[in-house]
Image (tube, rainbow, N blue to C red; front, side):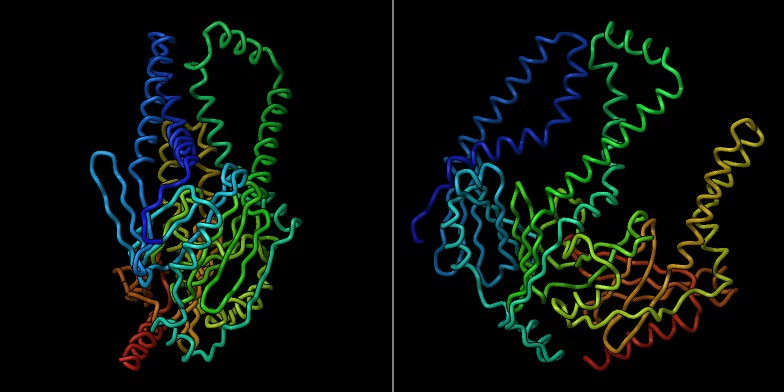
Length: 480
């Protein structure tokens, strides 16, 4: 492919609709601001903005060209300022293919090329055959990379066998039922409700308010329950649509993940870019022993829908199944054990006070000034104490040869396994109160999509922390 090619014209609409989706809430705020003066003015401004966006996308389509020349992807784009991008196929970390609704109707695909420096180049709409051709031209043997070879030699891995696993519809339904996404939906509903007075006409708002005030408490509670139930069903539907037909497949030194009922996504993760494997359980899934398997990956793109730096390897899985999954797909991380080093009993008070001191102050203030409502901060104090105790019982560290596992809790429970050579930094911290009790904390950092992520485990036995840091330094000396 030596001559420059253009995107499919559908990329104009695809990009345009993406812009509309991004600016949806901005349009609502614009309506709230301008409609106070004139509804007609709002629609004129809205039409002008949409027309400018569409014209910009049409011109941008004419100015966008791409080609593959001498093992290099070349992209030229830009209306007023020309931008030329050159990506060597030997610097490409992954090539991801996505098929949205419009893509699937017209047999098109979106192709994203990711590099280790967190740069992503996107071809929004090209023929599926062209996407397959580009993928074949740009793909290189990841197993030939030096770091991947080191992993294979060190762990004795032979990754020629193709492994595959899918998630069942029953499991996906359970994932939707126990998803924390319902809280996000409720937050959006509450935001819209807070602005409803500005959106609907005054007479309609006043009539609705009068009607609500006449309703009994039972009916109001019933309406609130139905709203919560509706949000729950929407959360289930979103989970089923997003992760439907979820499949993870291992081919040589890559994990290939496909998912989506309406918008089909294909994600490629080179094994040598994985920095850690995690198992995350929210408060709804933890009692049932279920959670999400994810990977911290160096380089690549952050999924804007998930708002997380991690890549989901499997959306829902039982804790008892994690070792079999690792053995099948990421066996270099070994088996997970439950023999964690945990904080001593004298560290409990610190865990409790770290999360509850603000609410204790609020409780004292309310008792002095507004004793009638002091039960509210009182409940918050009890809940924060329960959270502090749960964090104390969860915290743990485990070492096994060249692997390090940590366990912690913010609200949900997370277990993370990494390899010694993936740890970018490990340090020991100790403040004066910890020094008096012979306690210390550990902070470690690993690479991920945005450059790095840090984990802080607090108030362990001082000699246990010394053991961890000594283990880390000893292995560094061995490697050097």
